[in-house]
Image (tube, rainbow, N blue to C red):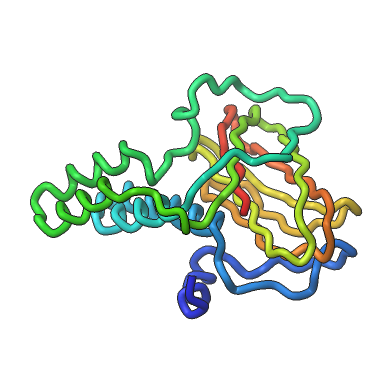
Length: 225
């Protein structure tokens, strides 16, 4: 993503790189937005389109989401006691702005606009691109008024992004700590997606805590680059 566009989006997404004092965090950050940030932006634009019924915003959300290739996250380990509610169907988790269901909604909203109809058709016919950025995704669920923990390896001197996308059914918070217990990044519980961006100084394991402050269980996705 061009640097100019990244700088414009930073205030919208609160994308200033996280800084902390600790041996596993590099002092230098990056303004370049990665795959996880793009999916967070797609999610936020989708929610806005859903609230306003704006087909142009929905088109943008779908394009953003379909511009990222997602894969299962290797090496991410869920730790501690798992007390989450069952998630029998992946479709019960956060809405995917790049899904066929979102495209169907767009086609309905664009029924009176031939130009938007053409754009919607082009999106549906577009094949995934090998050059798309790749995001790693893990699914989980967390019970009411409790926490979920993940342990993940990150490479030193490589800009990292860790995002939390909930199903909007409750308030979820995100905290990332390094292997010394230093808090790298924290977002208080919210309905909005959370995003942490930082650059580890060396290879190491980081702990991701997902906090559910709501009265009911909540499913979520963790997304990383």
